[in-house]
Image (cartoon, rainbow, N blue to C red; front, side, top):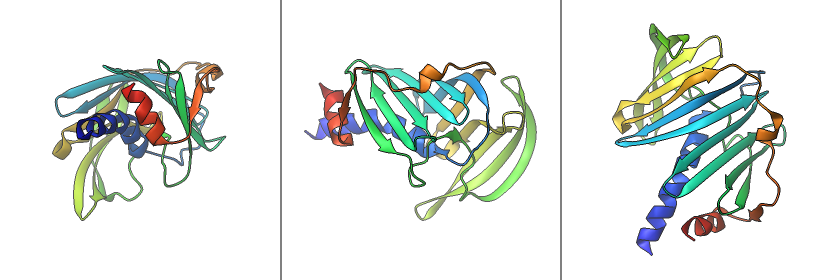
Length: 199
């Protein structure tokens, strides 16, 4: 039982972590797709991100299958989908549940620019910040691309964690990618979602 809880928490933890890393409030019409590289200590998790007019879609595949997260600020909702199981949960998008784009946290302290770098085809401004985590301050580094008006890389050495957008393509993204696919079974809770992960 304890092992199952740990496995469920690990699987749910990745998409939840990405929602927590991102913050709402970016009201612009950027449109692009990119590869996402999430590194958590020795684990590397590649994925895809699609952005269009404030909407976002993230896709990840691991040993348990694919997870898709669709963020719809216009509907004030987040969909988390397990296509193989044919299930999804719906979470209200509120200020307490961030969920748009990777961005320097509003609560960051001591923000300072430490350089400029060319990264993944974009000129970026490199910033170091301290983010309150519990009673401690965590140092994080962000590479902000002014052309996209958002960071394209975040790094936290203390946790051996990083998230980076690569192969960024400023191109038309189909609206259908941000729609909930038909035929899925809606689950009422994260607990039910976790149970389906284990089936």
